[in-house]
Image (tube, rainbow, N blue to C red):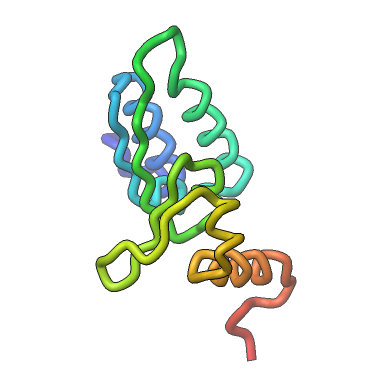
Length: 122
């Protein structure tokens, strides 16, 4: 049925699987796991990391565009963009220690994630 009956998360998993099977050296992922649950997201990123240098092949480069910061925690480099320019750059730990935009967003997302109430509820 050419994917017409697949959910958004299923479509994302199929697209990621096809890319891994193609063994592309460069992956460009724009909100690649936005429609999957956190457990599936964890499995996807574990597999991406595991296959990055599998079989002694050349490492895979993966560029992630993400609003959900939990998806980039293990990245070698994180670039925070503001108005089309790089505002901050570093690892997760480095960016948290700078207490800048990334740290503020990380804190906000983690606070919302722990709350049982919807963040926009009145």
